[in-house]
Length: 337
Image 1 (cartoon, rainbow, N blue to C red):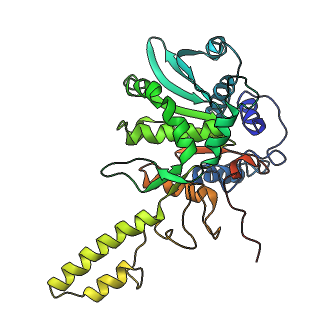
Image 2: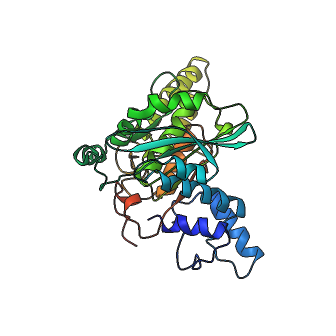
Image 3: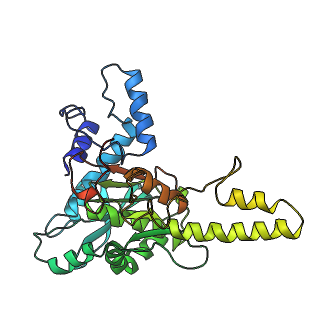
């Protein structure tokens, strides 16, 4: 599953690889709109270009991310590998389900980037508790991404959240101590990419890190684990509707019109992102899809990111079109009409 990302790294360094038409870098449903726009622009500017191509800057970013994400799978000391890439290893750790490390990119004495890398499921690693890892993957029911006043209505795969929470106390001080002016970066392969995405979200929600100080999170063959909480959004919208109807009625206004707009009837009706998902068919799930399959997987994740206060392209997801891992927690797509 690392092949598409490795192809990116090779291309960024001028190494010839098969065309992206034959080795797809990304699934159209999971790739961000920014990727799609870059691909369309490249195709228009070069008649020999594949529609799967992305910008040079994004290729270079993916090249760095995939190399760093691969080193966390090394057995033993990873410091020489990180140093070979021109980075300084700052911290590392391991649980019985995953491994992580933090490294800095420096220009002279100044730190320009701080990277947080998380490993995916390494089933053949003797330090991994395979029973617990399997149990965590099976905990697919949704939990709140963040709790407390003002928490966004976003849910996350419970097992993945618990695995990331286990090493969060170790990595959070490094996030808050990121030097001024340095970019905060997250990356991971497979399950590691899913946890890296949670670390990015928690940096903003738990630590109040400005999202503008973070680069997009790079994931490679990672299952989607975020979704907007349609039921919670519907409850909140219902409370707002009740208040507006009561106010209109007390003022002698058009309370019927307020009620119709609130339930989505009429020309002035507005629906928030994700608000169409609630109880019954179409309800959002922690896997990032809908029961009817009417919302694409990438759109569901991007919707959850928007609700959480991020741009829709805050995650750059690379995946092979036939990779089962990113779809392991998703229902099958609806049959063709």
